Every structure is written in C-alpha cells, then in structure tokens.
Length: 394
Image 1 (cartoon, rainbow, N blue to C red):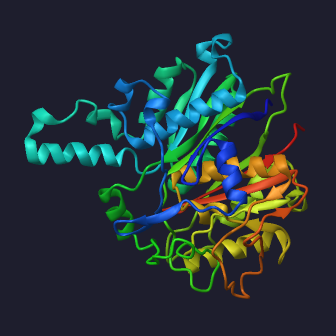
Image 2 (image 1 turned 135 degrees about the horizontal axis):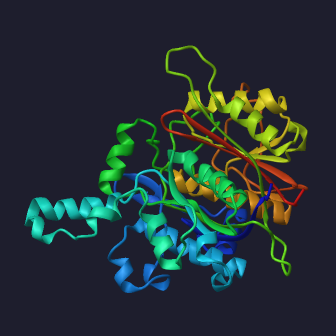
C-alpha cells in the first residue's frame, strides 16, 4: 500500500507564521499567548490575508479559512510542487474543522438584526460552513480528486491526515490536508466558556498548565497547519516523514464505567504502523489541562509505555489549544522535531503530581534521536485520535 509521505508544511500559529519561524520561537520558549478582552488566548499577530489570496476572496471567507488558504500556500511552496504536472483528478483536499466560520457568521447575523436582510453578505451561506476551507482550496487549486472535511474538534487535525493517507492509498497523487481554527470571536468564546474547560488564569505564562497540580483548564488559541501529502517523495528532496499509523476511538457513554478510549487508540495506531511501543521515541500529548482528563491521558500513556517509559511533551502550552488546528500543529511540530532531533518543551508547568508517572520534557528542549513520534488528540464528545509518524519510508 502506498504511504502518505509529508513533503510540505505550512504553519500559521500564534508564535510564528511559516514553519521555520514557528519552530525557532518554540525552541526558544516564545509564547504566543497574550491578554484579550476577557482572559488570555493564543493570538496570531501580523497576519495579512491579502498576502496569500486575492482581495475578493478575503471578503468572502472567514479568518479560519484564510488561515487554511495561507498555510496551504506555504506548504505548497515548501514542497516545491508544480500542480500543473499533476492531474486535477489526482489532487485531493482534506481539512479538519471544529467551530467553522464563527466570526464571519456573528458579523453577518449582527447585520441582519441591526440593518436588515439586505445588508447580509451572500457569502454568509457558505463562509460559516465547516467545509468552506476544503471548498475554497479545491476551487483555488483546481483540485477535483477526493475531498472532504472532518469535524471531530481537537482530534480533527489528526483525523484529516489519516483520511489524506487513505486518499493517497486509493490512487491520488497529492492531498492538501490539515486543520486550522479561528475561535476567538465573542460568540465563539462564549460557547467555549459555557463548556467549563477554559482556564480562569490571567497569567500568559502559567494559565495553560497541563499535568500540573493547579491545572484548571486550557487556553484557547487560533491558527493551525496544512500539509502536502504525496504518494511518493520527490527524487530531489528528503520528505519530512510518513503517516505510518492511525486509529480513532470513542469514549464510552458517561456513567457507564467503561475505560476511556485513548489507550485503545494508541494500541491500534501502533498496530496499524506495525510497530511495538518501544519503537516510539516521543509522545506529543493532548494535554487538556483538566485534572480528570489529564489523569486519564497519563494513565493511558503509562499503560502502553510503562511508567516514565517515553518522553512526553505538550508544546501547545505556548500557543493555546487550537481545536481542529491543534492536532495539525502538533503533527507539524513532531515532524520538525524528528528532522532536527530535538524535543520541544512543555512550558508553564511547575508542580506535577506523583500520580502522573510521565517523563515530561519541561521548560527546555531535549536533544534526542527521534525516528518515530506518536501524536495524541481528544475532541469534545468522546473523540480520540492517535497518529504514528516515522522519519523514514519503511
């Protein structure tokens, strides 16, 4: 079966636009979390959509879609792909989404209430929709191959990459895949706070502290990553890595007493990659920063790898939880970590309870030989996703 080879990375993140800028800031411990009107969040500063798309497309799209278009343009440039050499029916698009175009939708509904229906943009009908980014990318690049959107909240970025691998295996030459999110409009933040998992902290360096004794929720953020996934690496350059294994599972019904599905997801992803647990060199954790969810994740990692059995990190503490963009950004981070043989740190965590028997990489990067990485994500509602990345074709 043909592998899903990652040949290009495009990043739009709170601490850097472009994967090299983001990576440098991450290794330097630079946070993109800053104060907003009602708390703190990971905010993408200096983003100019018009640098990546025509002005008429800017006014037709939500900020979330603009991030996706920009990240895809950066990924294509990074991969050095000439789409003219690939049949349009062999090019697919798979994106992950969570909240959709909420900022665009809030603005236009506000116009409806205050000015009347004649003032509402005709693009309201599509700009809010979860598949808008997939559709706009398909139109922009003439991609007529298999395309879809995956809506599994934080797990969506991982699930999108897994679907991209399936599309490649079904015969596509190239897939633009990943996930982005822009959930910082007042409406979006109100919805998130109603869920009870947002940190009440106002300290930009300490509000998001997964696996910490004082963890009280995550910090929201915007941005994400897109990738070029191909059926084979280009002869003239080394790919970033391969999507070697994946699994998605669901948690049991609340109150049923069943075991959370993350452990099984890890085991199934390793089985899909035909790798034993000891082959994994680093785990990029979901890191919910909700005590019960942290406990469940730590238990799942320990059950598979043993106590302190593998380095674990959650560099999302420097950007926030990006929902559909978060899993995708973790994949980008893992691929760059394997490229440079260094594990980026988890920041802001000061007091790890003894019950979390994890080898957490804290505060400073750790040099290590990295051939295989496991990326984890859990979406609200019981979604679990695990992706195994390898640095070489096998």
